[in-house]
Length: 157
Image (cartoon, rainbow, N blue to C red; front, top):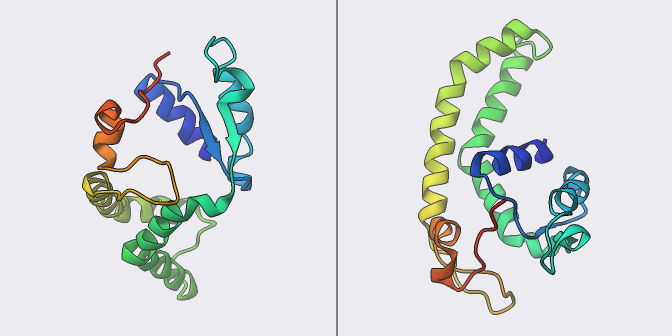
């Protein structure tokens, strides 16, 4: 699933990241082969195998905290709602028709909350960290205009 999102983003944005760093979680296992393959013909110092690196999951504290906040803020509600519907016999998650009805009824509501959360996240300020050399500033600006924040530029194909 993560690999699909990664490849979809590359196609959508028409860029290949210079370096991808991930922890050794099972959801990242395919990325360790995909990223070097995409950068194998590049000639800079981070091409091929050097374009992917594993890091400690303890370095993921900010994103893990964000996922916890996202879950508390709204996704936990929907997860419990769907579990309750299953327990009450109102929703059978092995029935394709039930799944499509749930999607029809809830997809726009959930997408609206995700879009709102994305907007809030991208406009909030990431503080500089004493223990990290990672970028700080507003995520939208860090992504769109990295040179304003002394970050590295996006690498195009």
